[in-house]
Image 1 (tube, rainbow, N blue to C red):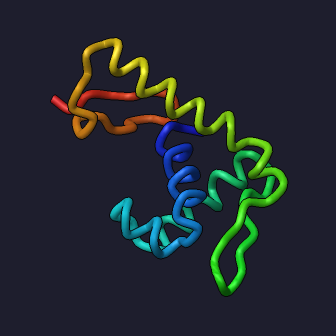
Image 2: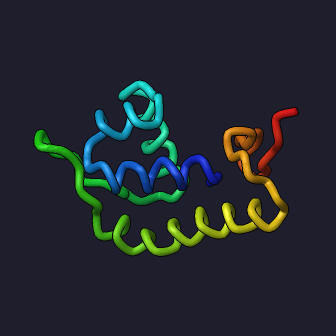
Length: 102
């Protein structure tokens, strides 16, 4: 699991729609769906219940929501403490490493 997956999870929770979340994150709907499916496969749980009217968190999704928020908040806190102010320079280069684009 990486920071980008956590951010994607949280954006999807916030938007309640794959289409809306994909648009705000500049992903295709299929790309976002694959990213969430990958996270679900990695964790071995279903995070969202998908219906024709949108998505909602599953029981497992509800259980991990606070920790997902904390992971992302802590990551940004670390970057801020290291005086990284332009977060557009940050990208995920590997599942376990943040990198600066030079």
